[in-house]
Length: 222
Image (cartoon, rainbow, N blue to C red; front, side):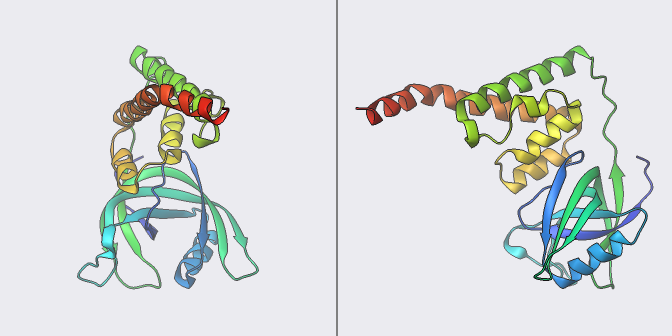
């Protein structure tokens, strides 16, 4: 992705962080964002910038709800008009961006953004292979132990490219929105290491709790 600025319509979200190479299903009820979706669907290059609202719904000097200066540009893949007048959309994350300048006027928020390219990675590099293998093993272990309490299975990530695997896990894990935003801002190698660290921590907690869970399960059968 080059360094040229792009103009994107923005949808600020209160508790969702979107990642490149992942899909997001969004329910759009507010009329101005329904108009945004309609306008984007009419274009050949249908991109929408998804950004996170700052906590406490603070406002900037223009009276707009403040947003964090980084987000993901997503391609509009599908639009479903509902009988209640609302709209369901499917978005596919394309690239990360830094907010350069919000633009005034118009029926919905727009901004100039600077795309942020991921560094090129050799999937066969020993370090990448080691991180990938460790992540897959942890996903397998946690999904086996937690079942439906863990949002992913090893089968869902094992065949995917490194970036898609890392971003999918980041998107699906039950993490606070601000933590997910930190992951989004990190470069892909850092993000992969952060995901590995998060999964290791969860596995350590499960290892500590396992004897107590067995005791609890045993008492239920008595």
